[in-house]
Image (cartoon, rainbow, N blue to C red):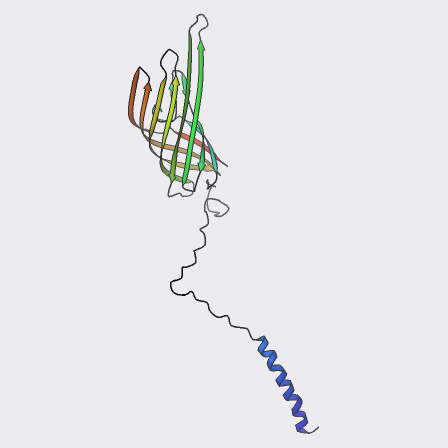
Length: 229
């Protein structure tokens, strides 16, 4: 075959390969830059480190926003006479149960109530002793510098009690309020113990009989056992 005729197929093969190479070449994506003065994109949300599933180093699951807690309040080192935590009516001691609303990871709203009734009658006489009491209160807690099982807080509260000891015209109304500080320690997943320190202004009023005013500090008198759900 003459050389000129052999050169024609070679040229045709070269021309057909050029478009294929052009299609296989990767396309370059132009870099997109934000115009000057445009707001920056918000950073990704910080992961909540309260749940142990998100941080395997956490020893216990703490309460998070939206949780509710139920607590039982126990006596402690203080006398509790003016601590908005219990009331003594002769032989009747009012203790409280309550709920804790976790509004945010830092803000918790506790509220509580307690009631009691005691009736004692002598076997060989008509003498009786009947004591009745009711107690309720609410407050707020701001938790800060939470670390592992430890959750310190500051806050305040107000309480109201109505006592009716045995006898005539001796109903007593108690009102207490003041700041508090304490610490919540998680002993297990969503289970904690709380101890508090109070600075309390207390007024006890018995209509037509007396008015008692006190300003006290109390510690250890409000040990709470809390279950969150």
